[in-house]
Image 1: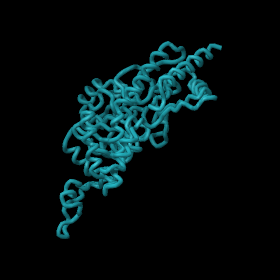
Image 2: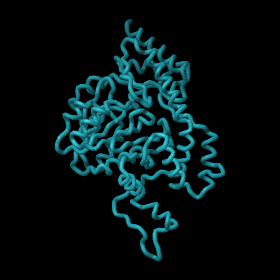
Image 3: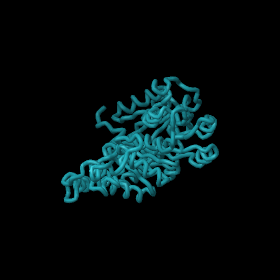
Image 4: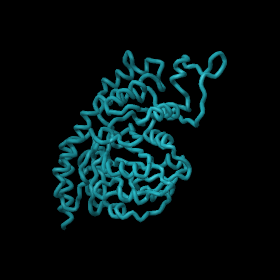
Length: 377
């Protein structure tokens, strides 16, 4: 390997001048009294809502926290069944265990690696209360079918859109959750956003993310918890420490200025991949669709050989996520899911980020073509 490794993931491009101003400028976070949750969080929530078309947005300290709050707002309780695609980040499922719900894994479609609506409907029972739609890699697929099925069975829809910020068609669920983790399309180092359809859910989420404290009332009282030595507001529900900080929000406010530019860059790289790899033997492209282009996944024969060949030529790859039913915490048993079983050892992610350019992607494609030719020998 004679060249610098082409990274699979990399934090998105951020204008460092804007970032420095948000953090250290005259009205920056660090010169102010607000390093924790303060006015910058409120400001970013408004910017986010306006840009992406959501009415009620609640910033959190992670995408996982956003999912947990969504599950609570959906009314999920112990013993309720929740249908989840088997191929996802385990962060989708851990909060469901907090609530002691029963996770029912559904199969995926081989051409998209996202939830198979037909298998989803087969898994519905009288105990099913919700479905979690995972836009894996940023692909928003089969939403009309899923909406019809959920409506027919009166199920809540929670969108795990942690990889899908900026994708067209996202936001059809009762709750939509995004991630601002380090390598996401918009990052705060770590963070998230919960978007709600109903005002009452929004107001409840605002309280639950910070120990069920009503910050609006606290602000009106000069941030004091008492008035004339008496309590001014009560805490009625179990709350969480899921709030973000103004440091996080400052990074987001700066980073969102580069978001469209970064997304166009990713879209361009994907178009180069698709044009150059469409006829490569031994490799299959996934179905195109409305996507944030966070991951670029393909299916290949002899995946380990493929990954080793690329690594020897300075190209990093990985599978990204594996089927969740194999983890001990979720049962530790390979379920009879025919599509997942068929592609389990085939899918893999290729580099896609703002650190690399068109020349890198062309080099990757040329290397893959060499791999394809080498298979014939």
